[in-house]
Length: 105
Image (cartoon, rainbow, N blue to C red; front, side):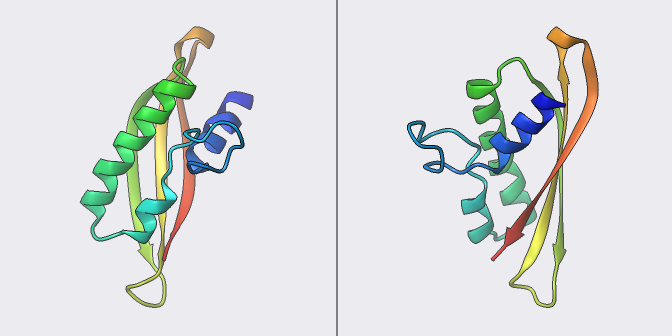
């Protein structure tokens, strides 16, 4: 449970938010302000997530990535639900899923 919480914190942290460790985090929030299409978001989000996990939590094996967008009252705002499937081989933990929510501006 602690590693799942740590992974959630890593994914929701943006660069510059952690004092003394500028590059800690997946830096996903800037992608929501530049949101043009689902495919563009997905490809860049996967790159950022893989990079941050390999740097800060290399013991986690990422398995799958999925995202879905829900538009709120207009086309300019909404939420993106990102679901990550992962394993932790050293602890014999498999098929774990984590979902985070990002707000599109």
